[in-house]
Structure formats: C-alpha cells, structure tokens
Length: 338
Image (cartoon, rainbow, N blue to C red):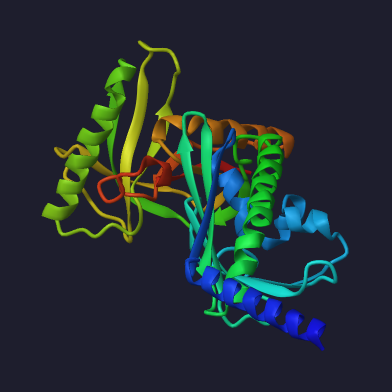
C-alpha cells in the first residue's frame, strides 16, 4: 500500500510540474526556414503550387512512400486539396487557401482529428542569386498541457523536415531548365482591320522613342475622331535588321471594326491583315527580350514545313502605364503562315 501511495504522490507531483511548466509555454507557435535556390521563381513556385509535385521533394513522403494520397479541387493553386492516409505518420488533409502567382502560397492543414488548423506560408522572392524561398509553419496549441509539450518536443522534428524539404526542392529546381519552355500554337484568324502610322528608323537606339511617339500620335487621332479600338495595339515589322545603321521600317497600329477613308494629308492610314493561319507565341517580360519567341516560332515553322506569307506582328496585351512590373507584361508574337 505504501508503494502505491508513493507512486500516486509522485504521479501527482509530475502532473503538477507538467501543468506549471506548460503555463510558461506560448500558446502560439511559428517556425520559419529560408533557402536561396538557384532557379527562377516560376520554377520553384510550380513545385509547391501543385500538390502532385510534393512527392518529388517532401520529407514526409520520403519517410513513408506507401502513404495513400487523394487529390481533389483545382489541379494547382487556390482550391487545390490533398488528403493522405499513413500508418507511420497518421492521416491529414491540406488545402491551398491563398495563392499569388510566383510570389505567395498559403496552406491550411488539418492533422489527424485536429479541429485547429495549422498554417503554412510560402514566399518566393527573386534575387541576383536565384529565388529566396521562405517557408513558415504556424498555429495555436490548445490549453491542454500535453498538447503544448507535444508541440515543443515536435519542433525539432518539424524543423528537420522543413530543412530537408527545402534541400530536396533546391536540388530538384536547380536541375531543371532555367527558362520557361516557349509554346508555339497554330490557329486561324479573321481579317484584322486597322489604322496605322509608318515609322522609318536607322538608329536602333531611337526605336523606343519612335514607338512611343507614333503610338501617341495614333492614340490622339483615334480620340479626336471618336474611333474606338477593337483590341490591343500592335506593331508590324515591315523591314527589320539587327545591325545598327540599317533601315528599319515598322508600323504601329490599332485594330478597328470597319473600313475607314482617311484624308491623304494625314500620317494615319487604313490597312488589313487578311484572314488566314498564324503561328503564335506569348512573351512574358520586357519587350526587348521578345526575340526568344520570334526564334521559337521560326524553328516551329521550319520543323512543320510551313511558310511565312506576310509580315510578323507583336500585339501588346499589357498596358505599361497601368502595370509598372515589367515581368508581368504580355506580348503576343504572330507570324502569318500557310
């Protein structure tokens, strides 16, 4: 009896100590890890935004490769959902509740039968050395002393899992191509009617200024004559050369809905791009880097035994006066082919 009495006293003391100790433990917790990966932000982002890719780098999948995974919701980004069953690690589910392309992701995780969510956030910041990925996991423990102590004891394991996950993610992304593959599509278009101004340049350093000046004049003409554009502005390369000093001829244009007669003394004129087929690619970023898309289309044309039957043009989908971030500028490159 005395032995049982002492065991009871010791257990009571331990319970009191654990309870008192837990009072000094924070209810909220946040664990944050960061790593700079030598890869563009889009490359790292797509591995995290698509749950199907997590099996390639997540520490937890390496701990239990037999876990059963189910995917639902959207394929990737906000609304993507995955749930899992694991005899080694337990069951759970995770959903992407916030997502900003190539910049930010927020996950909401429910582990086992927990009613309190655990939040994971991912920040992607491009630097000169690549992309700095900051992964944070946060939440709140219940008032139960055991719950607080479990979180304290599990913190080191969680930090290990996050560090290993970032290392795996780094190896995966650094082994991939650092440029987005350029997708060339083949499609048909209706006749494009447009108003344009022709520009002739021999000094390539003046190209941007000439573009801006011509588009300004054309925009003023449309406004003065109450003509509404039927789409995004574009420019057509009538004669092009990469050598400075050679003559470059191009036209800046706005599509319109109908044919118009323009006075002969105006610099503005009416023209059309006939209906037909085009090979096209979308460029994302600064205008001066659009040469990659031109090159990709030329290779596609050669590979598919097509012929260029007119002048190529570039459609400027993003208005630079409305979007200061050049990485978000979209330019569609088009080649008429048959």
